[in-house]
Image (cartoon, rainbow, N blue to C red):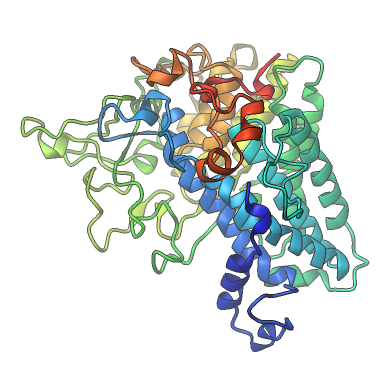
Length: 514
């Protein structure tokens, strides 16, 4: 675990390059080794790297949760496996510990020392969000010793997931307290200088904090002694109130250096085609919604050359034989031929464009969390109201924007929005899945693991016909930690939690267990 030896110069340098104000450059005694960096210069690069960390790893998690599958058959990720001795699936780990890491601590220290309570609140919340994402993906992570500066220390012990969950709550509550303060030495309006995500809107950041608390609390639904549906509902009610609060990260999109990882200019999704699972959810062939064709189908999914919308079945890939006409093949999320880079000038579609947006948390997502919590509680009236709001919110999201006529017809269909007494859990979970398709990979995976990939909850979901050899017939439950930090430098600590076992990725996480 060598992150302690990194100085944070990468993000500092990036922030300085992004700045156009000369006065920002005169902030250190030694410009080659900055001893003090303003919070305003650090926040935007950290936000950017957290988003990219999700997108990088989504190529693999997206296969696990069946958002998409590889054009080639037999790829290990489509068999719920992993690539040994590889950093594939380790980018979020790198984002949290290194690209955020000491830089985020420096942000927090500068904000605290300068009484910049808005930056302090956002910094604490970014730290909480990072820990939540990382533990939900990897399970046990390094928390208490993460930034130990002892130069002779080379092994860093892992903390339990229960401890990480508690730390997320502590940080989120402290963040809210600071976002509520108005007594600082620096104007609260200064947050807009460094905040790319919410442009300095403290109220939206506070709502984001409550949304994170809702996610954290709701993931404990399998733990009867810990799960409190009323608390989850209260958190959601204190969070987003409409699509206007959605956390949507947008990119400049001018080149590979500042474009979305999912955009055509970066060429990272050319081998991934939409799954059969999502295709059948939207085209009316999934039985969960009574054969109703979803109006989001042509907006979200890409159309083959012959005008039909198709998907790839997990593990099967797509034939490129001459006997399979090109116009009948599944295409990339940009609508281009699978397996090759998109032609120059490809603009992309849906959220798969160079500018995005890439959602991080949405009003629709949180309403479905409220719906499930109320359903578990037995309050079906509240569950139905939140369920309907969640569907309507996604239909009207700016990157979806279903017409008013189609929207009204869809919401009026009793197969989609039934009476309260007829509302079923699988409807809530599948509509949530649809609303998160293409971006909400971490929450989708948390849901699937909470219900152990149950096809009665995720109607139409099928598991690989042949699992990866090291699975021993078991479903995937976690990503293995990043290879080039943990398996190369921190193997002794990793061995204590079973991380050297070949099937470690199938070991259930704490939050999924009773």
